[in-house]
Length: 538
Image 1 (tube, rainbow, N blue to C red):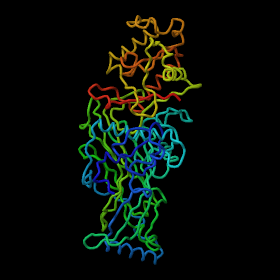
Image 2 (cartoon, one colour):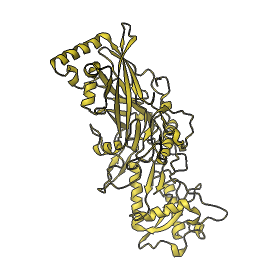
Image 3 (cartoon, helix red, strand yellow):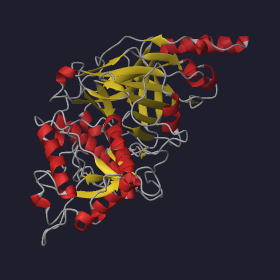
Image 4 (cartoon, helix red, strand yellow):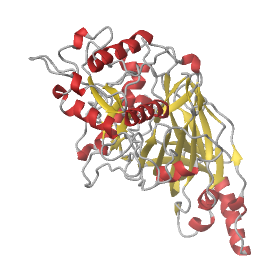
């Protein structure tokens, strides 16, 4: 069944959260599905058509063109050489800017984009903990938002890396490592990859263009690699036909001498109208033999129009995919192939740190974003121990609850994107809230400041207060969140923690905000339209 008559929101490719996430792709997902962890048997539902062969394409071949290819093939065989088509150079087709699609998808509102992202994230999170059984989603490789140092001690797999004319080698290898056929992975919010098996059916057509005879099938594997940009409102999408993956099923003669010369095209596409997003440059066309023996990474920039953005940071969502077809020179594609869609969220927030300034970006939003702190022997374990206690035994933390009240502390990562999370604030944009978070912390931790009387009986006892010669007062939720100590909806916890460990925990949080592109709270937007994140204690 063609996807053209279906709103693109209904063929969302579900991605996986918080790490290198793998998704088997077989059937289309419904908008009415609940955002919940599916049973293992349901984890193969994402968005690819006609399983198990995956994507299907139907192409009509003009009889005269086909006869010409066969004539050249016979001549080359008789002369003991390769057919001329085997080494044809790369051809770039006309840039169409969605003009080849009969119906562009409607624009996504912020709420719709967030809901679609959460829907994918929920399915992804289920795979993060799924049992290793037939059909179950599996996870391998370093996790997307878990800050595990590289063996060299660097951070090459966190956040954004500069975009070039070829995929970043480290990210490419890491993302595809262990990725199976008809699976997709979000390696981090700036990196995604997928690999699909597809079949192109070729039919000869009569003078009126009606298919009359099935000439054969060409089956191959397409690889797609996406890099989000932290400098511009774009995603660069790379794609190639996997080397030696092409299988011709035309017949013993045509498999060797005809099918390899059929041209085949790839083109990146934006799902929405070109006023919302665009794809450039144009299609890449090679004969099948060239794609199979000399793979090259075609690439397109999927750009997003800031004028369609909403709120302080001009946030907007769009979807993209890679299209497959054979057109021109006697060929006409009746049913184009389309890889399952991905969602990108773009913004114009001016984020910066010591690494530089990042004024615009597009990220892959189908994840449950979270920062991971580790327990055990490390340079921040005091912070980890404190937050774990706040999650697991909140009533045993300071400030103490007054019976019969119990404490509710948000932000614990569970994989459920609808669980209570945290919302970032900044001292510049939310000055009074930020200052009030600090004031409540000082009252509960040190017994000082304008709220000292409020915590006289429930704050940290004098004997347990931080020794400022080597300790800090650590608070959770963080002062840089809307749910911090001043929140009227949520409770908080304070504890004396080694100063160096507390400061390292703070540095990790600041790096995380940038690496995962967590946007500060915008009061002009709805709660569901604002960024939300979680904390995982490992």
